[in-house]
Amino acid sequence: MVFNREERMGSNNVDYLTLKPESATLLDLFLFTLSFSYVDIRKLVKCPAGKERSYQSFGDRWIIVSSILLVKLLIAITKLFQTFKTMREKIFGVPQETYGAKVKCEDWRIEVGKNSNSKLGDDNGFRYYGALTMMASTLAYESTPVIETVVDNCWKMEMDKCYDFWNDFQDKIRTRAFAFRAKDPNVMVVAFKGTSALGDWSENLNVSWYNIKGIGNIHDGFMQALGLQQNTDWPKELPPRPDNHEFAYYTLRQVLRDFVKDNDKARFIITGHSLGGALAILFVTILAFHEESALLKRLQAIYTFGQPRSGDRNFAKFMNNLTKKYGFDYYRYVYSFDIVPRVPFDCKNFWYKHFGGCVYYNSCYKGKFLEAQPNPNYFCESWLTPFQYLTAWWELLRSLVIPLFKGPKYFEGFNTLMLRLIGLVVPGVSAHSSQNYINLTRYGKIQLPSHIKP
Image 1 (cartoon, rainbow, N blue to C red):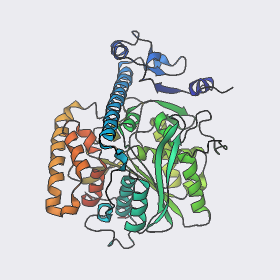
Image 2 (image 1 turned 90 degrees about the vertical axis):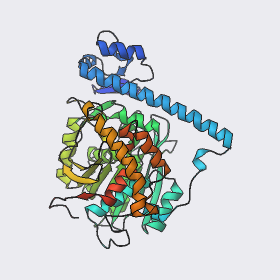
Image 3 (image 1 turned 60 degrees about the vertical axis):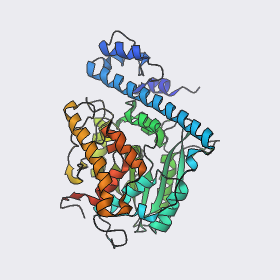
Image 4 (image 1 turned 135 degrees about the vertical axis):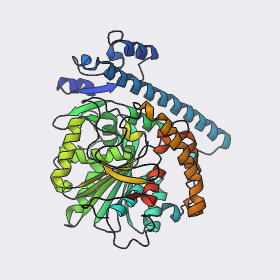
């Protein structure tokens, strides 16, 4: 007999929390905010029997209600944009996906300060790999032909493959990644695609989680995107499936196994922007869960940009211990008021926590290494709102003047310009643009700790 996931986890006494934005009404949310006793919590969430009262405090109710409201809003906006897209296709007769410009290598140049990729020599330090992984994380949003052209022709590196992976819970392809060999052929970089659609933003803001014994509570949606199985969770080896679907974790793990198999010098780097950053760290988490020590010893670093929180304080402790055990580097870049590193909420011990420190840059691209990012919760520090809006205006102005001082090739593009205009209304959204993270690798200044190679 096959149980659905909640029934099976409940039978194994595993803790979890799954939001139900599709069934929660606005009246339910309003009444639940007023009092825990006004609404049956199971109208809003799924959780094991007997755990309902774990969420009766006002703070917990507020987190649940806020998350559901944000997810419902994004679902509505996504439907609106889908309607607009359909109308556009009917009017012009061409699907939106077919629009696109030819690849210009200067748009994908790897720059570290004043140095372009043609002047970097053998530099494989923090600055170089920060720039390379940021460009790779941005490139992951593009189509396969663009990715292959940039890696092979612009970067002169060796492309492995682009992958599109199945999500067993959404019953469709939702996750993308690609792998390539860096300038040093002994280094393979795996880049996960991040948040490319409004539907993905709902995953960033959703607080649903489930517990992995010995690790902690981990974001459910991110795990599903990585390759969590509907009926078996995380088997160490994936049994044959009649549908032949590929899953991100299992396929990429095998790619890396093959890569390091006959090369004692082989190392790999995992990276991603936004949701892609969360997938990067959770990929390493499941490697540890499966005791893949041989691979973890070859992990050189994880670079993430604008990464959302992915687990609770137990998860954070587990990952901190993992980085110390295997000695790999973890660089979590955070730009200014970027909303995504500040969600899901970090308000109580059993909600979400970042681990490690962060590489923080302000809106003038001045960076520093911090133990924790400033203003950790975007929606809680209301006194910062005026500064967020002032910063959004500054970012728009900066976007317009950079080409005047640096040259036409530094124009950020119309899509980024439109996003900066949106930032005048919701500043944290425009701050999340990958262009900001590209800029900080190009123009940013930071004092490096003595143990980090420049």
